View 1: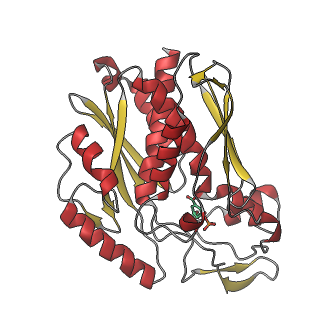
View 2: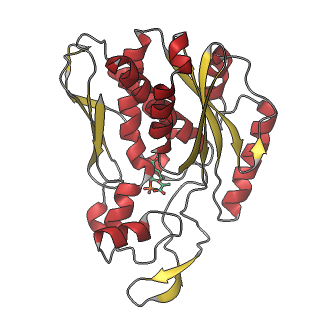
Length: 307
Ligand code: EPS
């Protein structure tokens, strides 16, 4: 199995192509849309999330609600399509892809770099993940996630079961199953917003329904770490299993775009300057957990497919 995404944050649209879904797998576009809605939620998201209402269009590979076995192409339109009129970016944000991209591709303007590096791309991944979840559902495999820490505020314990995560996480504004901790997380996010700062955190993705050998399989563990680590701003991934569920824990760093910017350099003059200020999120940890679910779904589906 493989997938590819294309698209810029403020380009015309995002596109994803996923290959390897068995012919005959039922594919419901409403399930993809429901996952896209989950990705847009969470206290601490920025203004962009009130502009976009992400919806998937299936362009190929699905015939009358069933996968045909050909590559599946999906499109998500950007309402905030304005890439042609956006200003040049010449004061890179420390910690973002701006400077590394400018050096790698020998550019003077980081606009193209950040448009592609933006976590907006994760909408396309979530669409791919939803298709993989629909494939895994046929095998009795389910995936859920919840947040365990934001900005240093941690949940007191872990949810008792997979079912508990399914019942509670999506009803909470930070997707945390500990109500008392989530109230403190909300306050922490509000304070960071007032300070022009951003917050990272920790989350878990649980996989239910894997056979015993898969819970112990080192190859699956390696694939899961690779997939989740590839998500923007994820800096650490751990895999463990209890007697029923496989559990992936991941750490997301604070978003590099700050409203109170750090010292940087003006690339044209080489003088010290403050980094560019772009619209962004205070935290996207709740959304990142949904994106990581998608990557776990893709890697787990691939594991089943290729065994
Ligand atoms: C995002 C869309 C972006 C950001 C965020 C993720 O929208 P815009 O750049 O128009 O505000 O909110 O991207 C970043 C945090 C980043 O550093 O690029 C989304 O759809 O998830």
